[in-house]
Length: 132
Image (cartoon, rainbow, N blue to C red; front, side, top):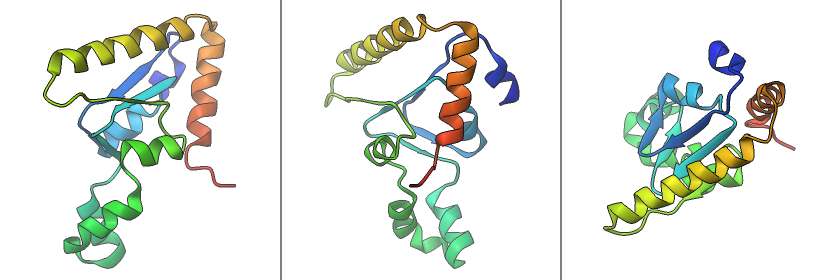
């Protein structure tokens, strides 16, 4: 994660299914985090969370609700920057949606200097989970 934070190029992470565990932490060190609308993103599985919190992994559904791991929840919490729509049964359209976002985000990030990219990542990561 430290090496990623030191990179002087734009980093765009896209959660396409289940972003979890240590990988979830690593992809959080990005200038932009995008997420498919039906994906989930969390550092711990709902079963693991329920086991730790209540000593009962069967409460995974309740844990998942509390964890706020859906694209909408994470967008509202400002953990991710954009939700990518997933058209029903149209893989080609999904690929076009992803490509469109990569191009758009890259264009925006190209305007920043290497130092600004690093600082943006730092500030973004520091503000995750911040409550007011």
